[in-house]
Length: 275
Image (cartoon, helix red, strand yellow):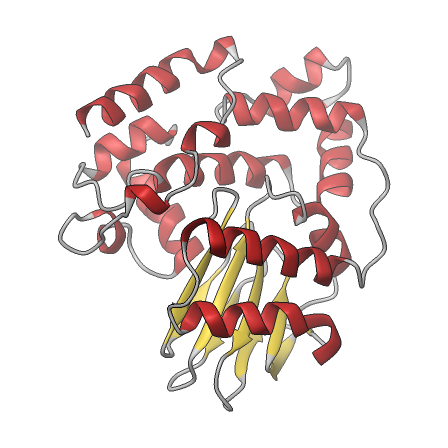
């Protein structure tokens, strides 16, 4: 986990999902990875999947590395706008060169923690270089991003009112500038908040409340849709172990400057203190 994204190494699997991240898939061996969606099937050694595309990953018996860029990642907007609306992209060898080397080292167990973070950021910068820089972010979108980082439960209507805009106009502006709707960004904030408790042994009800979900049922539904498996497979202390020395600075994921986030922050702090 890299704080604003994560890298995952697998010996091969088949999984169906739909999530808010930009996803990069890199084959480690000679077998390509394949992604199927309504737009067709794309296979190759390196693929880029746009946010919110419902797809099935077919990589049974094909080792690969998956890299997810969360909407808070510095390169998310750059790559999301480059691939949104175009479906799954097959990356050329030159585009994926740095990523492929980093993925191979990670899959072999040679990269972890800060070293993995540094190597992946360099590789992602190299990939982004192949795409046009997005236009400067509208300050109003920047304000909405900051507001949701501080309080994921803040509504579009409340943000639009603060910005003296209609909700419809605010929604369209956000989607056009970020590559995902504000609702998806809000869900991403909650998912990140929940992820810090993986392997903690806390109940899903506790994690859901601390992360800002309405209840554990909603949390489980969203997690299953995003990652293709129920949260019970990730949050049990018997199934998942977290190396605290190799984790990112969780506090930097969600600035604590929103008054509306008070109860959400209290719930998070209570669970963290229990750990």
